[in-house]
Amino acid sequence: MRLSRSRRLMAIALTAIAAVPSSGHAEDKLLTEAVQFNGTILYLSTEVPGLIFGAVRNGETALAGFGKIADGSEKVPDGDTMFRIASVSKVFCGSVLSSLAIDGKVQLTDRLQDRLGWDVTLPEKDGRALRLIDLVAQASGLPREVPVADAPPSDPFSTNTKEAQIAALKDNPLLFAPGTAVLYSNFGYDLLGAALANVSGKPYVELLRERVLDPLGMKDTVFNARPEDEPRLMQGHNFDGSAMPIVPTSTAMECAGGLYSTADDLLRWMNWHVENKPSAADAELRLLNHAAFLYRDGLASVVGLDDGGPMDAMGLGWVIMLPTEHSPLILQKSGGLQGMFLYVAIAPTRGVGAFFVMNQFNAAGFMAGVKTTNDFVAEIAPR
Image (cartoon, rainbow, N blue to C red):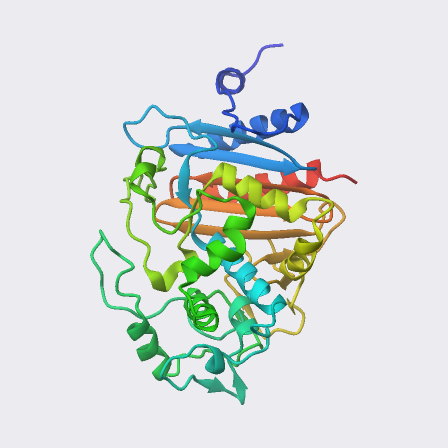
């Protein structure tokens, strides 16, 4: 049987592009084969400069890297490659909130006015005050972004400050009554991070490290790359393919989208979420982390939450998709910043999860990656 030219090229590429494993991964040959195959197809179809595809199942992990980490580099992305995880940072912020709630430091229904600690009277709408649960479940009614002054390309987030946020709050920016609808809002998470820092009496960066990152051994998950990290940084690219600069993470955006991480750290974190027998100390935290707190049913509208699949409910940062005939319960979160797209999907009831990161803004590529990741989780999930 003769193969078409495109099929011959695909076959050659599948043979030539090898998965780049991360150190310390448990051996699951089937998982490794599936990750390599799906990652190869995704890389070839998107034509992005660099891509990583990884998965966890029953405590074992696999990942594959493709392309190059940066223009002019010959380094193939691997488990040690560092990249922005953008709005996937929000799920980590949800974990911090969970941890503080377990310790009795806050309640999810606390008013933001009572926890923020700023000299500003927060807006209300239709008799509803902003609560912590409204912020984390994207039901705050706040606009997507804080209105800020222009900033230089080398430091584009520098004008998102406490002062800018207070000025916006004084103008009563609520678009709907908190808790009655859903609109994706980075502004809401900026305020959540400030409230958690105020409650704990320490900077959010210390709070996250103490309560989430250090217990999981995530030593390479940081808000700003360290000098020694420069050789392994993945370079982002804009929609036109032009390289985007590595820029500072402002304190104001840490909770909403400030983190860098590595594939190894993400797989370690995902394994914690899906392991079959969590420790007694982790059981309560995972219970809160995976719970649904706001269902789509009855909401006036849902805007900006369906990019990874239809949002059925909101957790503490996670977008929750209820099980269907062909797919298990999936908790997912996407992120995009400075030329990086990332998507994580876990199925805690099945012990599996997968993610991809690509280093170019590519709308069609992102949607292809989401479908590949969701389908992969469904295919490897135990029936």
